[in-house]
Image (cartoon, rainbow, N blue to C red; front, top):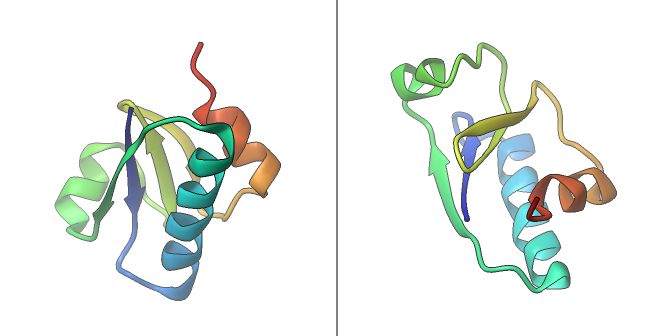
Length: 78
């Protein structure tokens, strides 16, 4: 699973990245976390507000830091 955290590196973006790492560990899923700070790349996902969370190419959250429970749901394999 590839997870992108979209944002300029602000506190909320870093918090989201830490929460994703923790949620993946709790679920026992393997994920490759990539932070994307280039605004052209962020906009290529259709995201205009940060932080953004993209799981396997699908935008899951925009403009907020989801709760730990929400992140776990987003990371569960279909």
